[in-house]
Image (cartoon, rainbow, N blue to C red; front, side, top):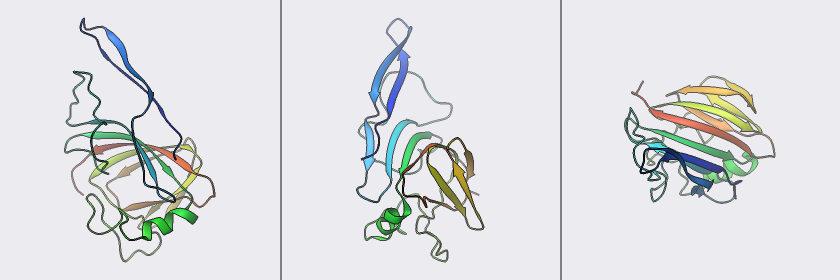
Length: 178
């Protein structure tokens, strides 16, 4: 089970005054079980520019999916378990990293990591805790807490080679395909 993330959301009351509309654990948590990543969806927008009208929570009652809506964005935290657990989960039947899954392109020629995928997004990734390797088709870099990676629609994977979970915050913004 991932560590709960406190999410505070602001909005406007009936008089147009700024107020806190929620404060508590983020309600949209997708824990896929032992060895798999856990995703906490924090917010989503459906268009650019985004609308700040209303107080509805765009994360509740929606299925979890990797990319944001067309012309939209997603804000999430992903907890990566150690590869000693995760790689087996990725290779198991029914894993989301298969050739039929929406938003994923599995690189069958690249045998380095089964988590390779690509989306038509620009992603801002901030390592919150732990450490993780960012893998590209060519090369890899170790990222530690506080490091930031700007992922621009590239084929990539994440590899946690420690025995501790690694948490990464992501902002995904819809982008034109490369």
